[in-house]
Amino acid sequence: MNKAVRKTIIAGNWKMNKTPSETTEFLGELKNAVQDADCEVVVCVPFVDLQNAVAAAKGTNIKVGAENLHFEKSGAFTGEISADMLIDLGVDYVIIGHSERRQYFAETDVTVNKKVHAALAAGLKPIICVGEHLEQREQGITAEVCSLQTKVALKDVSAEDLKNIVIAYEPVWAIGTGKTATADQADEVCGIIRQTIADLYNQGVAEATTIQYGGSMNAKNAKELLSKYHVDGGLIGGASLKTEDFGIIVAAAK
Ligand code: PEP
Image 1 (cartoon, helix red, strand yellow):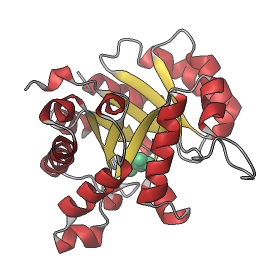
Image 2 (cartoon, protein in one colour):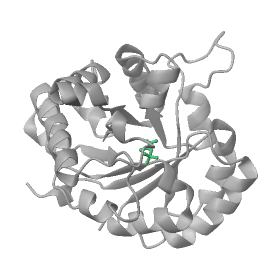
Image 3 (cartoon, helix red, strand yellow):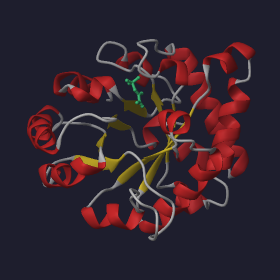
Image 4 (tube, rainbow, N blue to C red):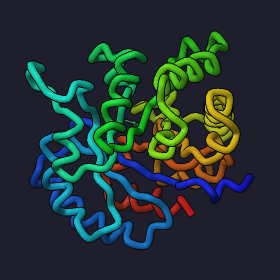
């Protein structure tokens, strides 16, 4: 199979950074830096920045994503945001199950699955994060952990819906630490996730699914990581906050 059949997606995850006015300014610069992109370019931004991001991305090749959502449609969930609210704003993608949400906000594989269904039902494209902790890697259970997280996240998701899903392999020990998985480690685990999808659905579905790597990807290491067969893009935190670095990563995704 040729990896070119899959969509390469470079997505930024701003985490809790940038104000609405900084968002407008940043995207004004970013659109020039990524206008010749050969891949899908996504910026996932804090809820309060979404409206400005959507306005600034209009007429460009940049898509906008949220960093989280609630799985219920509406109701008494003070402080939460639904999929319908995001769609109404013009948002395309949503990150689900980022390790920081699992670690600090008690998100579990089961809530991830509920959020995936809520996102799909509304027409949002989920970017589902899976990845092992350092102790799990050292224990030799990376494959089991990533496979289990993938299986639970995709429970009752149809093969048709998988066309709108992106999986991001994000080893927790590599996020925000400056420690990147080697290109071979990233390729190996993205391959394990692809095999999990093949087992759940079939080989054709697995070969068509975009699987990103995330974890200290930057302007220097992106090319090598993205050259790997199973790595179909990146989910980028720190380096997505600088237009120049993000532009270089996007350019590396040829
Ligand atoms: C992330 O937040 O998803 C991430 C990969 O962060 P960083 O690139 O900073 O490691």
